[in-house]
Image (cartoon, rainbow, N blue to C red; front, side):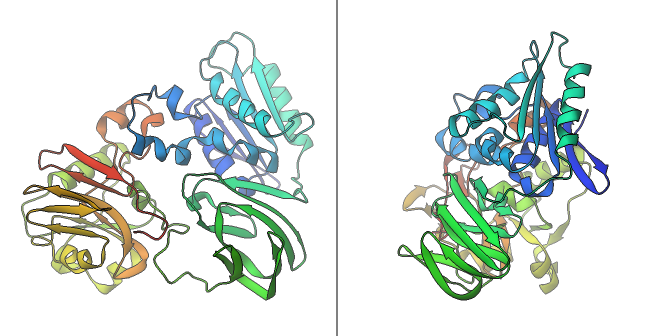
Length: 403
């Protein structure tokens, strides 16, 4: 079974079982403000154990908080939540992970979360457990908003809760928290690892013990002090929807751009995987056919180098890298060799509200698509350097200012 919604009098309950259970944990805990309730059965909620990824390199592990939904367990207290698995189902661990993480932080007694364990019936939802889940969710409908919101995230991609958006962080993939109360147009907030917030309307704000003058739509932290900020952010800065990593470039409309060189093997592979596993055709244009409207409306995924692709030649001087015929310099590291390939994501210098991606589709491939969606997590961070044969030399992340 797959994740699905149940709609009762315009109240939406997110439900899932099996791999749909993993989807329910992800969507529910990343976007808790969207749902009247969550019912997640089995699935997975962590990468290390489920994917048996102990040998993963450090740059891969660094991005796991994007995909490890159990880390967001405290968000389960913002929405009525049921976790389930049968006692003999190995995927019971998904629910146990969330319960154990929540217990480390909060008392779950009387909380808006229930964790049910069914009898020995394998990978199935026991009828008696299903009845208990239904009774719990029904008793909590319609959903009531907690007076004090305690929201956490590890990335600005999952930074929204109702009336506020975490739009900047001190360091991505470290835990960021917002505790907030709001009465009318007045809000009081306490934060951790948050550098920028955007509100749904101008508010009078007290944050981390500091009162901001006047009603504000956005605020940012600078040298330990909060101040009113421009919205949207103008300087290069990791923010909601423009925070990376490379795979984030395919969560919105994108256009692949090929240059004058022979067809790119990387592009061929991306196109084949998208067609086979995601059931669609990717947009592809030649570099001399890209229009101003394309630059405005799409993330640009550019294949080639500065000699073969005129759009790479346009954007490369404005990226925090150096790439010439003799090698590549990125984050202070120099890689020498002819034919090296730079893979990266960066706010597009031609339209900073969109991405530019160099020489990459998804950073996982056919083997992962064929195996389990627990393996569909980012592999390269924000940048990578490869040999012409595909061998990875290095990969990593830009800082919060895209440097």
